[in-house]
Image (tube, rainbow, N blue to C red):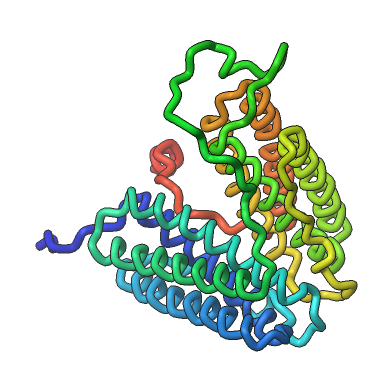
Length: 335
């Protein structure tokens, strides 16, 4: 007799668990290396917290996969990292990187929680979200303490409540442009900072990549990130607002293998997906037409880059398949 109390995983829950497992297995590799190379004794406990959280998540998910007779993803293993390699990134960059990963984790966990149904899956993703919030607090507080936290720009508070009275508020291509809003400033700053972190990371990856195609792919990503930083920075400069510094100085000159090309390609692919989502949200939130249209023009560029990366990963046998719906046509043809 069928057990009515057993609720199967939905497609959204499968997707959330599979993606979380892939990301946590990557986080274990990356943070094991960071733990071996970090020198700042205040950064070390934060790396340990991130590593232990990822390990704990993996154990929980492996138990769920076993109970559901769901094949555990391969993800990333000891073969994908050389923990004895010399230092590639400064401790300040590691701290900034972990803060950025916490932001991505908060965004992803919030989305998954909105679609999760089963109580045990909801509980798990709540714990992932809470750990991401704690990591955000830990990294922010230490960056502030060490004087390396880069805040968004300050602007003068409004004198009174005002309502938009004319369509000029939306203009941006012709004639006088209005000053950008605090919402638009926030998105420009965040996307500029995100590209700075991505550019530093991909610069380090380009230095240590073994495959020639992968190295060239990363060099292309470095240039794209640089171009996007210039675009967002120019919008801020036009308003006499400060532009965040690049993180290039935080990449050291080591050039031998640390991470597998497979791991680095997956990592950049994940960051590309997050970046596309950020641009889409920023476009919707930016009412000045020139800013909104600029985001609209950048999304296809990042999407094309991400697509080329996916094709390369498939060609080299590095792309693990996520759960898929049954192919009904194939099932029919098979009988």
